[in-house]
Image 1 (cartoon, rainbow, N blue to C red):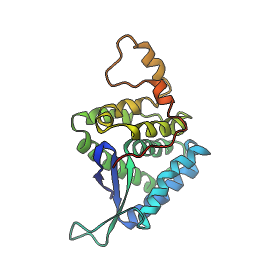
Image 2 (cartoon, rainbow, N blue to C red):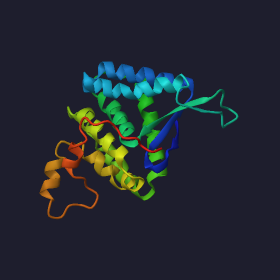
Image 3 (cartoon, one colour):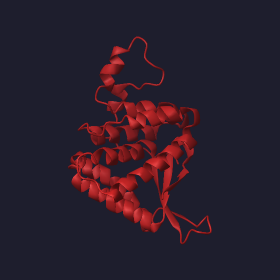
Image 4 (tube, helix red, strand yellow):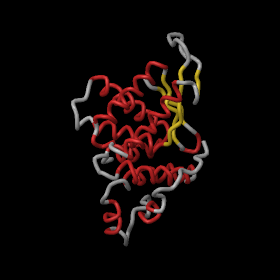
Length: 215
């Protein structure tokens, strides 16, 4: 079972689990990456960047937590993840399982991550939680450019934002990974919604390194 701790400045969260939980997550990520057509080539390398963090957390290279409850045995380990990266990776895991005969173990890991995220989103975004949840659920990882370059660039842009910008624009950032986003925005150029983002600004982050996220 996964737990979480919210980061500062609306940056993201620390995903927390014991050794067995993280080991199982690491295994399932590699199984999905190998079987899914959504994680081929550079997209697979980007996807497995999440597994890289899981592995280092298991090794004690990230964050370590003492048992909080009497029934917990041994320490738990955690790793920091920015919001758009985590939401995009979990959405890709879910979408990938439509392309191969997924196992109960793979499905259980995804359900557990989704359950954790639902709680974390409500905890972090309060009145904006529904907007974030809806944008997350409508992600389209089947689109060929979803992981790279789109999600990669959106994560870079997100890291550059202030706390207020992250809280306001995360739903629009997720929506902007839709291939029709720019055309839809253009059709509403006379009266654009307040929380939409300029596609040209987002495009400028393609291929850029992620700035320091200020945890």
